Amino acid sequence: MWYHIDRRAGMENPMSAQLDELDRDIIRILQENGRIANVEIARRLGVAEGTIRKRLDRLLDEGWIRLAVALDLPRAGYPHHVFIGVQCEPQAVSRLAGALRRESAVIALYLVAGEWNLLIEAAFDGPRALTHFLLHTLGQQSGILRTTVLQVLETVRSPADWRLPPARPGHILVVDDDPDFVEFCRTVLTHAGYQVSSAASGEQALAQMHLSRPDLVLLDVMMRDIWDGLHAAEEMRADKSLAGIPVVLVSSIADSPYAGMFPMDASPAADAFLAKPIAPDRLVAEVRRLLAKRG
Image 1 (cartoon, rainbow, N blue to C red):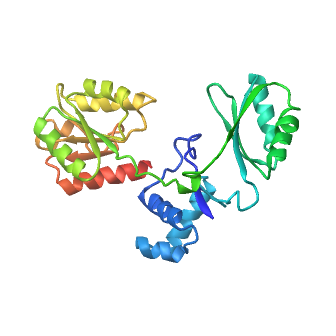
Image 2 (image 1 turned 180 degrees about the horizontal axis):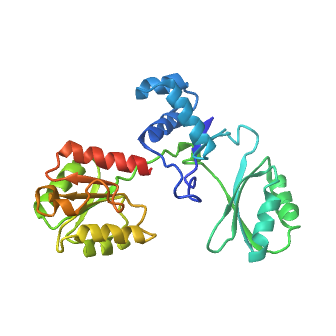
Image 3 (image 1 turned 90 degrees about the vertical axis):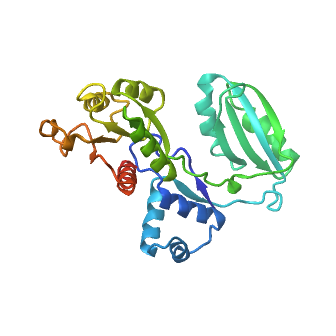
């Protein structure tokens, strides 16, 4: 038995829950040993067994993982493991896929782009069964233009051997015209495991965000103009493609003559405000909090 990780889960709803580090740790342990008990997973990760049980229920319910049985086809009496490429008329693809889903010989069906429209993975107990499938099961279907058969000689790596790769490091965009502060943020956040890029103005930051969407933005309030950062945050909120990115406004405005003009704890364009100077642990904690909340 093995746990299959569905990498498409959540794609229909981008705002659905994402995998956090605990989810990933649980999945990696299950992929190493699908028969491991919840209590042992909890012991290895240092959390309560109830937490593991709830996480597994959520991962299964949301379609992130599913239970599967990896069968040794030759030992089970199905030595002919093949992939069949099918080229068919476009209007026939859905109908053909629906019909083949009910065939016991079919292991998996893939809609593909390129020369072939449909890729069939199937297993047979002998050449006659394969020939019968090609001549009768496929031969009776209308709309098929041509087929090709690829015999699997040896499985070098199976889906059961695939492991969840490490999570992509969060991308933090630091927007400030003070190079010393930018370097401070880069050093602290890179050490904490994040990828860091920078911009020197709100205008430059907005242009960069449309080219490479960050996971969080640290935005200085006062740069070229008095409210440069605040205006950039407001433009982000008005742009549907950027509105969901967490924004942390940073500034030494609390010690400036403009302090009373800006309600630092109540800006609708920001998710948080940090006053300079910022302690490294405070910066990392706030970034982690907002990224976890977003996920």
